[in-house]
Length: 98
Image 1: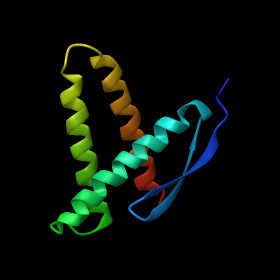
Image 2: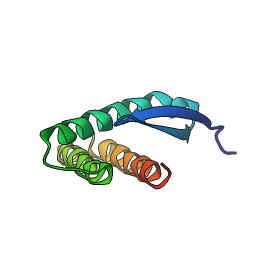
Image 3: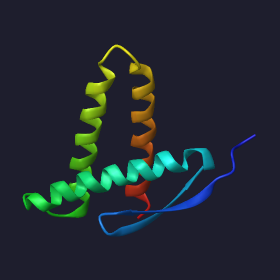
């Protein structure tokens, strides 16, 4: 039986995205979107990168690098790698469905 999904509105770099997710994943998705927005704004504000798609890719790489570094730590590495894979899928969905 599949989980029921509900739309969640996320604002990332002043753009709204509606993402379907299970109720038990809602808070994690919102938190992830906030972190992505924070990273994207930091990159945009440097003035060195233009274009939302380039900013998004650099932010995703920065976040992935940070989480991969955390995953290399012995305790909880599987959990972090799993979270990273889930977040990667969600980021790809946002970029594919503006």
